[in-house]
Length: 566
Image (cartoon, rainbow, N blue to C red; front, side, top):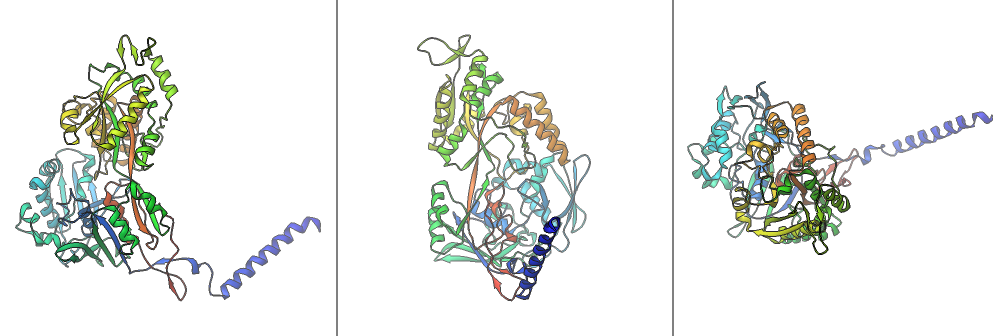
């Protein structure tokens, strides 16, 4: 009997489990009781920081609260997920010719505007014509690009775009919000900008205009209603209400008082209060910006910047985590690449260069830069001192960052002089004429999901473009030039991974950090997710799957347990 004891034990445990299952089944079911299912209905109210101007996607580039509303009211041909991969919106398919010049677009069948009118390729062409003639409302680079593209309409559902040459980042330009021709026909862009239609917009997005909320003669909010005909499927939440507040503190107080369930942005100073609120969940996403130190590689006054070992030593000597902790209260991410993390093109295998002042000093010494004399604190090689000017936008934030950088480098025997320049002329007076030695710079990549690093790092942009460091690396330039004309995502990924490896080896500029964005939503709102952002309105990118109440597989309808915040 001894050798059968384990088998008897198994039989006993099996019987116990089966008996328990049968007992639970008799009591009304198993498992299904605790499985929440999203249900239609409910209202979500969010505090927006700022005030509306025009709810029109062609006119909202300077107003983030308008973009938040337009994100839900209007649709583009395509949209992008959090990794920067295009997905269908109004377009059902987009076929690209092998040479990358022709884009054959098929709209989804049965598209309608919020007012019931049919949405066709004529509306798309009408919007493109406005982009071509947009005047001061449309950025010049966008206007020029669309002016160079031929558009052919085959019928109400099919059209073709012909580019003058292959340009893989073109998908970025297909996200424009399409406007209804039947409402704006005969108007030019100036008349459209002045039209009252912008306060009662008609789009094709997941939510339609309901009403403006007024306090006296002032617009205090807007109510949106679920679009049952939305091509992407009806949203769960029946209503979205946005309320406008002058600042984040007012928005947070509105949440505390129960007037709203979400806050569009939680700045660093307000974060401790928000985190202390147990029923408020904080979602954090990487912003589409990178801060770095540009090095002028073509300035004869700083010949040592041409030496890779010097650039590596400067990088090793930067305590970037301390900058993030002291200046951003930890709300940023150490940057290791000029291609944003979380995107399809980011090379995760690039190793982080950590803070190692001892290795930095040894690297400089091995490169021939030593401290000479008892009272001399600056390293030099062949009588050329490691001494340069670090220019920065003259505000409190950048001054604090510049001081921390200078302190790090001076501890290595590098003499750094700080130069504050008014932010509004920083680019024109320092970067464009290349009249700087080192510069603290923020690159804003907002609303451009394609990672295209060409403008800032290609050799062809060194003289008159945005390659302000004047990096001269033919292999890197060939790589990003090829990636610009290749439509195959796998091949582009390989090319951009190679580019990042070259960049990490040469360090023509010193990446510092990526700032992050904090968004707050009540735990009552379920299904909320937020990934890396290309615009702050992207926090609403999954709003069609948010829900407030849930149904369970039993007789009662309940509020679900909250899922985990990001």
